[in-house]
Amino acid sequence: MLKGKKLIFILLLFSLLIRLFILLISDDITPLDVWGFSFANVKHYHTPPLSIYLGRLAHLLNDSPMAIRIPNLILGSLLIIPFYYLAKILYNQEIALFSSLVLCVFYPHINMSVVSNEYIPYVFFSIYYFIFSLQF
Image 1 (cartoon, rainbow, N blue to C red):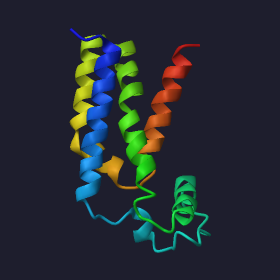
Image 2 (image 1 turned 135 degrees about the horizontal axis):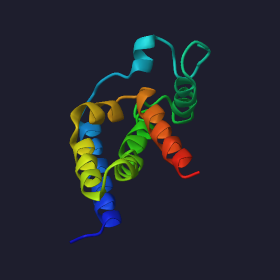
Image 3 (image 1 turned 90 degrees about the vertical axis):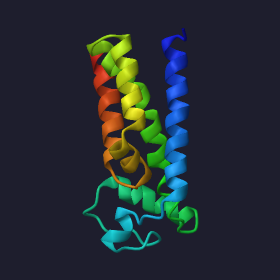
C-alpha cells in the first residue's frame, strides 16, 4: 500500500486535473466582473485585498479573466495538503486520507476553486496557520 505522502501527492494531482477540466469547460463570469469595475483601473477600496491583487495580476496579463482564476485554482488544489494534516492531527491517517479524497471531489469546493473569490485563500491560510500554531 502507498504511504500517506504519496497518496496526498496523487490526490493533489487528481484535484488539480479536476479543477483544470472544470475551468476549461466553464465560462462563468467572476465576482469581480459582477462588481462592475475594470481590472485595469482598480480603485475600489471597499473590496477585500485579494480583488485588488487579482486586478493587478489581470492588468499585467492584458485583462484576461483566466488570469484571476489561476491563483484560486492552485490554492484550491493545495488546500488538500493542510486539510490532510489537520484531519491527521485531529483523528488518524485513514480518516485524513478519506476526508482529503472527499474534499478533492466535493463540487462546492471545486466551484469555489474555479471562480475567483476570496474564500479559498482565506480557508487555505486559516487552516495552514492553525496547523502552524498547533506545532508551537
